[in-house]
Length: 473
Image 1 (tube, rainbow, N blue to C red):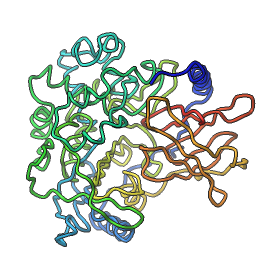
Image 2 (image 1 turned 60 degrees about the vertical axis):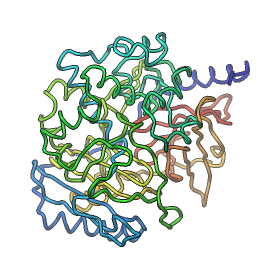
Image 3 (image 1 turned 180 degrees about the vertical axis):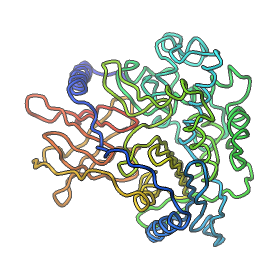
Image 4 (image 1 turned 120 degrees about the vertical axis):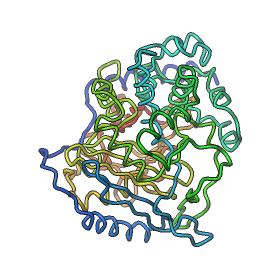
């Protein structure tokens, strides 16, 4: 839909405010205490912490989950809880298999880095150099592989296109998904912002196939799963019978329902892998101890990027780099798919690798169970947030990301507390605490409201995977 002259002026004004805000204010970060010597974890202590967390999460209504923890590469816990198949009253198997959703992105990033190490590509190559027909040539020449890895390319997101809802359950090829956004204009100038892009990782998977002659899933299985002994992991295929695969559920207002079916073969690269908790902990430990990438490539992957104006990000290449896990320094990723959640992290100071996979989605974050377990094991290092007194009512309203997206932010006030939800990103409203004039935080997401002539006209939402401006409706 074409924008009116008024909409164009409003959008240009908002972009100006965004640029000023980003230049003036670095992203908020949780403070981390000085590194402490890692204490050895005992299997008894780890299982006790995991059991205590499980009691709480099962009581909240999730169907089941599996957890695996390694320290110094040694397995100290592998355990499952709850039900893997509620209808049959079947307990979750110890080696249960789950869809890992966006937790597949680090595998795609590692594949691209390995190909870079072999000289088959350079991270700053334009996409058009390798996939000239994937996007219009004038677009493919402007975006780089690095920008797609860091979600700063501006490639439109296919999951927010209305036509994707009907396509998601069909057995189609990735090209059909790409066609949904192929001829759309970029969401923003490459490098000017960060918006989580499944489309970018879908394109990277297509690049892996182009350069290796192997389907992305085959490459991951042969080059990563097999060498690391990840025998419970494989690429997702539609209608495949997978031993140990648990059923997916959604928790809606305290009630479990069966999650809707989504086809898997059309989402490779940005998702499209199945794995076990032990395999994912094995993968995380291997990645961060030099068994997947050489030192230079690993440094590339774990170095946070920057926007073109110098604004620091909290995302490297397919990995979040932040003080995220109970305030402890960590490298991590997560994923959410209808009925499945995955989260895997490596804590370098404690030399801990942890993976938690669940067969339930609902009003909780991907890292919630893992953080619960780790707090019981190594303590909570987060600095308490001191609320700043602000007149909260003036921030309430609806905010729209841009005219080509279904992303909207609803800011509400309840019992004197401010809540916000971004649809379709968030699983539920999140409370934001005021910490300074026009600035709010909620653990790992920050809001900075923008003013024009003293009136709230927009907000910049900064997370560990995005920096996006919203205009007040």
